[in-house]
Image (cartoon, rainbow, N blue to C red; front, top):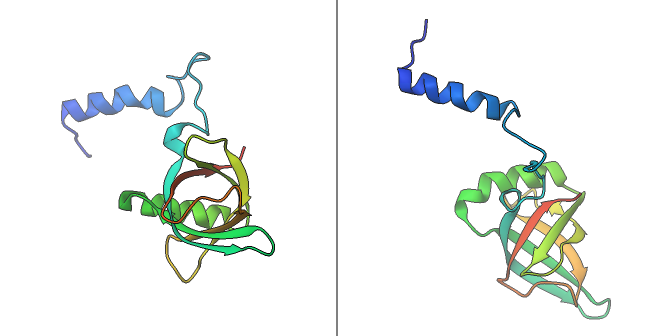
Length: 128
């Protein structure tokens, strides 16, 4: 039988109700769109089609520690709708594609007026 030190056992016992949702209240609901759910990303390349007024954005995570999270996010949402926020602007919906031959890279297209600049920082999250 596995024996854990008493401090570890108490810590696990105290965390268990929260892991099971007992620590949530109506005043503090868990949101799928909290700041912790967003992944901070950076534009790697920006290619404009001036004739059509569109911009192709190739991006990756800003922080290296978020690479596994972004990879999983892109695998889950490949070809689907997500939301992006540029600066303090409104969240907007885009279709995102995972670049299969470049690990942890995503791609989306926006109108030229809405697209971030090269090397710009922005956030992504699952669409509501």
